[in-house]
Amino acid sequence: MQRLLLNSVPQRPEWPDPAALDEVRRCLAASLPIVLPRESDLLRRRLAAVAEGRALLLQGGDCAEPLHTSLDDIESRLDTLTRMASLLSGSVLLPVVVVGRMAGQFAKPRSSAYEVRDAVTLPSYRGDSVNGPDFTPESRTADPYRMLRAHQASAATMNLVRALVDGRSTTTAAQVPEEMFVSHEALLLDYEIPLTRVDPGTGRTYAGTGHLLWAGERTRDPDGTHIAFLAGVDNPVAVKVGPTAEPDELLALVERLDPHRQPGRLTFVVRMGAGTVREQLPLLVEKVTASGARVGWVCDPMHGNTYTSPTGHKTRAFDAILDEIRGFFEVHQALGTHPGGIHLEMTGQDVTECVGGSAGIGHDDLPLRYESACDPRLNREQSLDLARHVAGIAARR
Ligand code: PEP
Ligand code: CO
Image 1: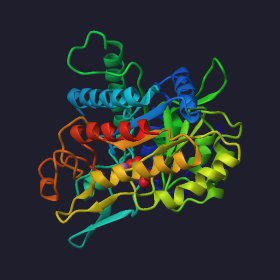
Image 2 (image 1 turned 135 degrees about the horizontal axis):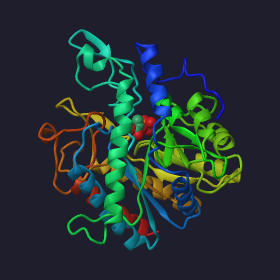
Image 3 (image 1 turned 180 degrees about the vertical axis):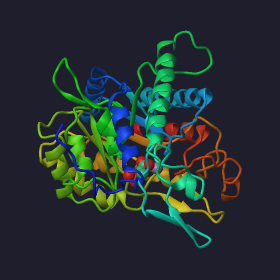
Image 4 (image 1 turned 120 degrees about the vertical axis):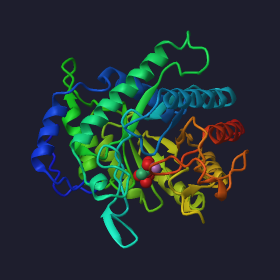
């Protein structure tokens, strides 16, 4: 891959010790990848079916994965995703491609580089591969050795995902998908680049950290380094599309990321907010479709619907999430294009981070089990509720 200069890349952590960073990068470059090129190729073929209207994508997992997770956490998330996928495929009669936001989702973009609490200013939490969530100078200092721990945690998680998928006929309790892929935001290029490899069989270049990588809302500049990185790998890639995106920006992203117009290569993950999607999305889909691009369109109904509750927690309302999905489906129905699926922050655990749903979680319940280090996730029941609603919406088309 071409050499990318990282000095002034947006969202890059301030690494205090350049020698330690170099050592970690060398160590990552000598480490095993988490996934193989042929698996990423297989996901590209699955996503081609999504782009062409023959399948749906269900992508879900943590906002910020913790370095320390439990088998139960992984198993219950797979179980929840599997049940959601069968609700969707049962009503839409299309295969559902299951992709976890897991085994690599350790780096977070932040709107501000610093956080102020009680007149104390510290660097913002940037995900467990960079620093810790505790509000202390030690925890918030970027530590490159955390990238080695993130690599190890990704490998351990992927190992369990593979074991659960392989043993699915013999597991009793948890449901597991027949086929499972993993994805994360390609934000931390100090981590991604050393784990990017040329496949000796084909001479093509692949990110080894996950099957599908995406660029976030804050790093999707078509001329920026994150997009240049994604342009240089052969994995399927995605880009988040927020309410300020212009048609020309999306056309430039298609040019950069999918010059050969290969279905499955590029997915746009729309995250506009329930109040915006019906107005903003149609022109984007029209222009991209008219350009001859063959991208997948997926709805992230989480990131445009975040607010702070009276308890001070970042939260999202189930009804707003559902309404954005409804709007997304309406837009595609009106244009005759394919609403390709949903991208969610969710867990199989019984947390209280988003409000609403059939259990009626309210603002006062948020402190009970708020475990996310970053954005609020749908809990198991809310995730299954949502899948039932989406199955109904999709089936009516
Ligand atoms: C995320 O997916 O956690 C995220 C930060 O999203 P976005 O880039 O869309 O804001
Ligand atoms: Co998030």
